[in-house]
Length: 264
Image 1 (cartoon, rainbow, N blue to C red):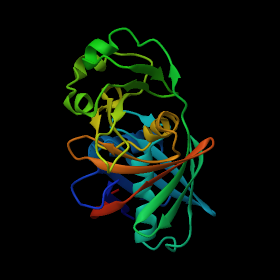
Image 2 (cartoon, rainbow, N blue to C red; image 1 turned 120 degrees about the vertical axis):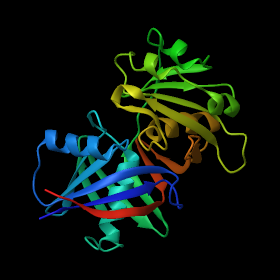
Image 3 (cartoon, rainbow, N blue to C red; image 1 turned 90 degrees about the horizontal axis):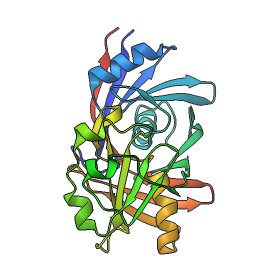
Image 4 (cartoon, rainbow, N blue to C red; image 1 turned 135 degrees about the vertical axis):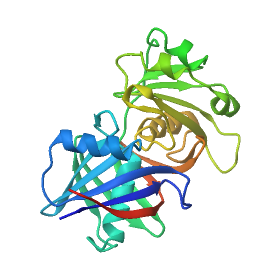
């Protein structure tokens, strides 16, 4: 039987904006090599592979080059597809079993709320060559479990940054780099961008997992636990964050762009 395959724009309510993810609904186990081949063929920043397991769903995420341990926008897209395809009633939470433990998604009107772990950012020294590759002078530099984290002086500097991706690709020991600053807009509290050429993504349009770092960092900086971030990529996208102790709720919207089948 063909395998259902969807393309969903996540963290947006408009097609052709936000972050596109592919969602593949599996009927049986498939090996990692096959999933990586599908992800490389689709060639989005993330492809989500979903398989029903009793009252939960196994969820794995692949870039065109590697499996990753946490991805927000593809999780949002996967939950959206399960409800839209009537595989679960809209009022029923989605439970995902992942490499980052159990994650849940709940529909709230037009928004989808994801329950994710927070990722602490600890002050550190930058890896050799990173600041030169970015062309940035941070006010703060830190490291999370996955990524480098830089706070810049202004939103304008975040938006204007033009990294040397070939040089960034050579930096070892990190998945990607989060760049952020306080927003000058009344609509958003902070802006960010995310670069991960080492795993095949020069710039990710909207990165849910990055907001697992951004939420606790900006909650402390701004002394508020509920914030709205804008990822200032070319496509752009909005992420609402609520800090709940060691968990963070990421809220976003999603729109299906393509429904198709993957031929076996």
